[in-house]
Image (cartoon, rainbow over all chains, first blue to last red; front, side):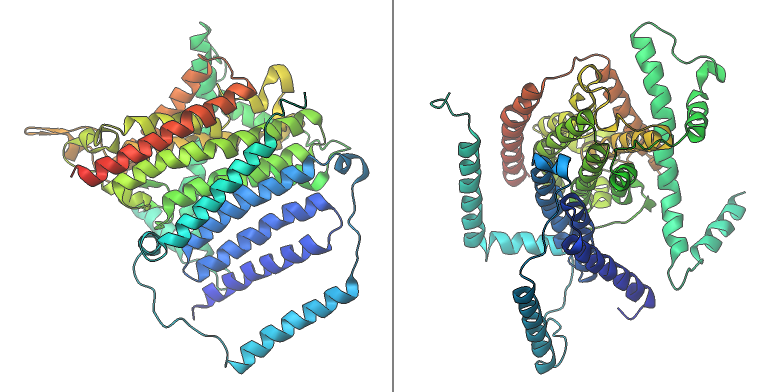
Amino acid sequence: MSNPTYTVIFYLFAAITVCSAAFVVFTRNVIYSAFSLLFTFFGVAALYVFLSADFIAVTQVVVYVGGILVLLLFGVMFTNSIMQTGQKSEVTHIIPGTILLAGIIGALLYTFYTTHGWMPSETTLQGSIVERIGFETMSRYVLPFEMVSILLLAALIGAAFLARFDKSGK
Amino acid sequence: MGTNLNAWSEALAGFYFIGLPLGLVILAAIPLVFIALYSLTYGVYGERKISAFMQDRLGPMEVGKWGILQTIADILKLLQKEDIVPTSADKFLFVIGPGVLFVGSFLAYAVLPFSSAFIGASLNVGLFYAIGIVALEVVGILAAGWGSNNKWSLYGAVRSVAQIVSYEIPAAIALLCGAMMAGTLDMQKITMLQSGTLGFAHFFLFQSPIAWLPFIIYFIASLAEVNRAPFDIPEAESELVAGYFTEYSGMKFAVIFLAEYGSMFMVSAIISIVFLGGWNSPLPNIGSLALNDMTSGPIWGAFWMISKGFFFIFVHMWLRWTLPRLRVDQLMYLCWKVLTPFAFVSFVLTAIWEVYVP
């Protein structure tokens, strides 16, 4: 990571992430903030690449951009009033928000300075990470994996049940 | 010539811009841009000619011999056109839409191995990346459709996105069958595992008795992912004028078309890599006639890769002028009740084959 090229690219992506995330929060136009979230997700994916977690980076793009962002955009676009009024979101709860923000930043900085800076992982990364993830998921973490799949299946059935054409109601 | 080109590329590779190796990035991007441009130029020309022959016409004949320069003339015309942005359109999203769309279709080119010597980035998650990055294209379509502030555009965009998101599932499961046969997601390794002196017999399509099923499923799903007939309801001209790009004209329209042909070549390349050996020569060595050895190598690899890609683009066009368009409900029926169950079946059968048959 000492290569200046990496540093420059890292700060570029960090700037993209932070600026677009700020834009998501500060813009009053709901659709712009949804589109701005795209750049935030890609920036976070790029930061995962810098952590040598390529699989997580691609999964981030697949899940957040391909799934959640598209769902969000659909939700915003199918809201009827968005077309006519150019809906604006109001600024509310400034004081509790500021206190919460200051608290979180303070806690993070406190942890950072009391634990003497960054904590690098004890085990070093070697070989392809994809095989490791596959083996770990299917051996040590097989029970949580199955539980998550049952949870998702239940959510899927619930969604299908809610969206089903109601025969009794005509 | 060769040494000149070499010196030129070395000079470019050494070009740094504020400490960034910009030259290296540009050097890798140049062939990819050319491949995308050629797939557009000859894609459009091929489409017009193929449709003409299928309808017993001649097609473009005026510009150049057999009209071969027609697309270049079209591009020159599009370059000169006025860049119209509708008054009530959302200017920012309208302008950014085609760009995001093209970037989305072009990003996957980075992981496509065009020959044993040329691949943009040999990632160990290459195949997964190639499936996942299509998500950016989806956002581009939504930006274009919503930014146009036009009901047809919005309907087209929503249809297109619903279709792409749905068909990603059978497509991904079908490709997973190929990945399972290879045991890796690295596209260069997947290709290398299919090379051998018997030519096409080493391709994954002929390596297992079930492989034809994911192959066909991925082919159908990829047609839907690039919005080609018979799945072109997002731009059904009899209902929606032109779908999400109704309002676009001039160069922006050209960029949308570049993205469409770019992603057509992308899915064709992916299906060739996973099931048909990518840059490997399909010709076998027959006794002392070493056809496979004669037609292998970095340059031949690029030739095979691009011809396989163009072959699938030809099949896309052939189907477009043969099959009628599906209705929206038929489209969803096909995806969720036909392709997805069969994709699961092929997944399980491939797994059984890979585990129990050495």
